[in-house]
Image (tube, rainbow, N blue to C red; front, side, top):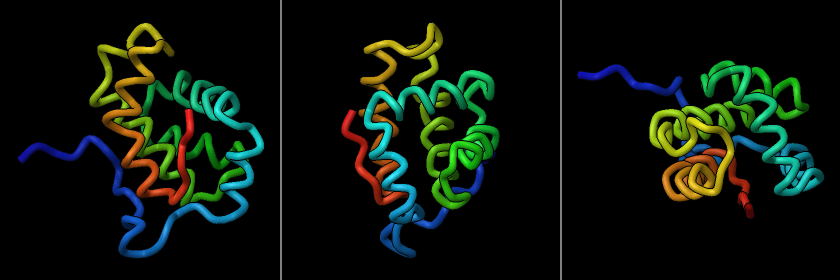
Length: 116
């Protein structure tokens, strides 16, 4: 079979509860949608969307390690499923693709809603 493109994701929220806690939710809410996009760009661009790199970057953005893995999952999903929409950088087409194909994975992993 084909090797997985993503690192081992945290257990699904249905099995273990959400990976992100109240502190992570507060950090996400503090920046709002614009802050989320700023953080994603700050981590995804230098990492070229690599999930492990992005996860490590989000730990540096003051998210917990467990929660940071969910951002890595989101980035890896976007890279694998939306590469042609996102190759030119952040755009409405890129956001739409990520929202449709990857946002549900992030929300299940993290237990947080992304209102973008």
